[in-house]
Every structure is written in C-alpha cells, then in structure tokens.
Image (cartoon, rainbow, N blue to C red; front, top):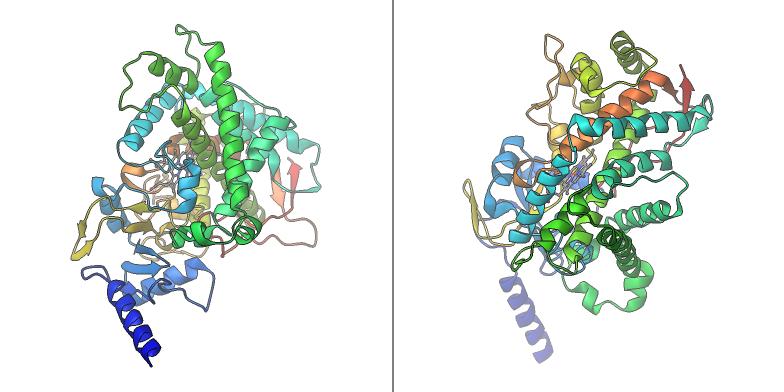
Length: 492
Ligand code: HEM
C-alpha cells in the first residue's frame, strides 16, 4: 500500500515538475521525460505538417528532454532569426561531438566565439574569391573536369556520385588551403567518407542522444557504440580534425607573411600577431581545425546533393531540360563553358536552379537555433534554452507563396516579364537572419556554373525501361538527400 502511495506521489511530483511552462505556444507536451513521440509515423516532415495543421504557424513540441518551438511562416522566421537572442544552438549531443565538446568553430558555436569565427571567415573567404569573379576560373575548371568524367559513360546508366562531391570539395579546398585533389586521391576519399558517415549517423542512430540529454552517460556501451555508432561519430570527427591539423602544420612550415594564399594562411597570420587573449586565434589551432571541418561538412554534401536533385529532376522533366538547353545555346557558344557574365542572360536556367532548391528543400528544418535568454515572440514567452526550428519545407510547399507547390515548376521564380526572382518570399533554402548560410553566394555560383556546364554538354534521361523517383528518405530529418538512382547522360 505504502509502495503504491509513494509511487503515486512520485508520479504526481514528476508531472508537476515537468509541466508545460505558461506562455509557450500551443502544441504537444506529452509525458514527463518522454515528451510527445508520435507512434503513427517516423516521418518528421509529416509530424511537423500535422502539428502545423493543428496549432498554426508557431507551435511547441516537447520531444524527449528538448523543448522545441517550430516556426512555419516565412515572415515569422525572418523576424525571429534576426533577433540576437535567438542565435544560440540547442545542447544536442551530436552538436557537441562536432565541436569536440568545446565551444569552437562556426556551425555549432555560440556567443562571441561564433560571432568572431563567422565574421573572420566571411571577410577572408570573400577576399579569396567567394562569390567573386576571381574564383570563377576555379569553379569552371571543376565543372569542365566533371563534365569530362561523364564523357566515357555517355549513353550508359551511371550514378551521379563521387565525382560531383570532389568538384564541390575542390572549390572549398582552393579557398581554405589552396590545394586540389584528383578523384582517385586516397586522402580525399577518406575525408569524404568521414563526412558522409558523420552526416548519416548524426541524423539516424544518434538522434535519441540529441533528444534525451544525458542519455549517453547511462546507456550501456553495446548500445551506445554497437547500435548507435557513437564511437564512429567520434572517430570521424577525430579523422577530420587530424586531417585539418596536418594541413595546418604544413601551412605553418611554409608560412610566408608576405604571400598569404588561403584562409589557413590568414588565420595563422592573425594568430602570430600576438595578444590573442579572449579571441579565437589560439596557438593550438583547435578552433581553426574545427572551423575547417565545419566548412567542409556544411559546404560539400549540400552542394553535391543539390546537383544530384537537379539531374534527377531534369531527367524526369524533359520539357524543362529542353528549354534550359535552348536558352543556354542561344547565349553561350558550344566551344566554351557558361560563365558568370552569362548569368543575367539565362533567367530560365537560374529559375530552374532555384526551383530545384525549393522542390528538394535539402535542409528541411534548417539547423536548429536556441534562445540565449528569455524571449517574447508575439504573445508567447520562450524561456532561455528553447530550441527553435524553421520549417523551410513547409514554406516551400505553401500555396500562399507558390502557385503549384507540389510540382517542379521553374516559373515560380520568373516574373511576368520573364526576369528571374532571386529573393522570393517563402523561399529560404539557406535559412534567414544572422546565422543565414555563410556559403550562400559560393553555393549559388557553384550550382550555376556546374549545372549550366553539364546541361550544355549532356542530356539526362532515365535508363531505358526504368523510372527515376526524385524523392528523399522521409525518416532522415535534417538533410533531404535524394534516394540513389541511375541516369543516362548522353553527349549532345
Ligand atoms: C546548396 C548548398 C547549401 C545549402 C542548401 C546550405 C544551407 C544552409 C543552412 C540551411 C544553414 C543553417 C543556417 C542557420 O543556422 O539558420 C547553413 C549554415 C551554414 N552553411 Fe550552408 N548551405 C549550402 C552551402 C554551403 C557552402 C558551400 C558553405 C561553405 C562555405 C556553407 C557553409 C555554412 C556555414 C559555415 C554555416 C553555419 C553558419 C552559422 O552558424 O553562422 N554552406 N547552410
């Protein structure tokens, strides 16, 4: 009897301490400890869409120990993500592993470390050509090289895989370390494998560790390392950091203050100025190493996956592909690849690329933010530490913004005069506000030069008698990579 009474008392206490604080937006709170975990589906996009239908454009979802607030309206996301007190990151286990458990780098860093790192990277990556014509020849070289790699398999079914990753990686390597790799280079293969495996494990098996803080401390090793592959996550991070460190050491050895050639050089130069107290420029270079990993993790698979979506969507929409090809043919002679100067004269091509980004919603929930202090959003009060996610996919499929939300329809990005609309309400593939993707101008430039060069040279089609389904795995919540497919690229 006493046991039952104590149990009831304990449960009552548990419900009381874990009740929903007043002021949060309406939504699902669920049970103590577990929160709300729907059993009807593992498709997070579906859950968010259902919560939005039930509660509107802002709702609360407590899942595990994390209190998350979902934002599903473009204007609301824009205003919230421009506020300084909404620029934190939630305390997710995988975010912490990516930073090697210290506040470093850019993507997962917070506060002053984030601000310093972001400013320094933006300034100097631009100095080395990010978004400028000086980088064009580097990207064009990779584009032509990529197109060449498909010539040997012209007319045969192929997967668009490794060579697209190398092209995107090489552009980053040029900016960061002034180097370039061939597709068969063992170092870059290992580097890419570590990035891929990191992305895969983070959004699948390790997800419960993000949602239930402290779970990694109590789970038995055979679950943690055997099933969840946490040791693989650490090994990948160590591998990436080691690789970055080796390159930093090489740069140190050959450092010439009068000839700074890349991002690592300017970072070393800043560090050597001395008096670095309270700055990110520490002599152990751990911040630089994590920043390098961040740039590669954030900038390589995103660009190459968008390319994979594009080829699949063109192969399944031959009328769009034809229109894009005739536009390119009318502006660019066949004996040279398209250049940035041609961009203005290729509005349909640009519209196709923007539509690929809308349709694929590659980062459907953005990267989660968190409040760094108590915040008032309209009538709602969000306590410090509340997770915030911007549902880009919901905006991208909202008929309020897009005439045919579920179709691949490049005209979404053309005005009545046929001019391209690059900034459109409802469109946020790179997120919005103060943490908006740092590599957006680079990504847009790469996508334009890679895509226009490929489409100028090849026509894409599904292999004879087969179809291509441009869909992603709905159970992977953070990155909507297209399901692997084979396509026939035929030289024109
Ligand atoms: C199609 C390609 C890309 C897409 C769709 C994309 C998308 C995004 C998104 C949605 C975010 C989250 C922003 C937020 O926290 O609100 C982000 C952050 C970031 N991206 Fe990209 N990205 C792409 C390419 C790149 C490239 C090429 C780079 C490399 C320079 C890059 C570097 C970063 C960095 C460093 C951040 C973290 C920014 C911060 O926390 O302040 N991204 N990206």
